Structure formats: structure tokens, C-alpha cells
Image (cartoon, rainbow, N blue to C red):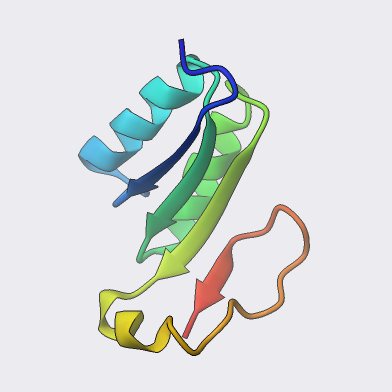
Length: 85
């Protein structure tokens, strides 16, 4: 249903956001997870990779949103959870 579609799911480390991301993964979507908790994102990413081919994750605290225009993610190995500061 969502094969080869790209989706961004905020709040995807737990609860409703995680459930929404799981549903997209079951449909074959390529997913970008965004949440505040790096640990929860790592867990969710690992779970979803069993369901779909591509899952990326970014830990992002809403207090730092204003810096996004001039910042870039800290370097992280491919497939790792990146963090914006």
C-alpha cells in the first residue's frame, strides 16, 4: 500500500507516533522517525527495520527547532540515530 512512499512521523519513539510508524512500515513505506528520545528511537528503528527496507531516525528537541535553519545533524554512522543540537 505504501511501497516506496516516504513518510515522516513525529513523536515516533512511543505511543501513537510509534503505532503510526509501524503501520506505515507494514505497508512498505520508507520512514523518517523524529522524536526527542534517542533511546526510544533506536528501539523503534530496530523494530521497524524488520518490517520495511529503510528507516531513518533523528532525535530532535523542540527547543532547538529555531536552530535547524543554520545547523546540520552531528555526524553519525550510516543508519545511526542523528541528533540536532
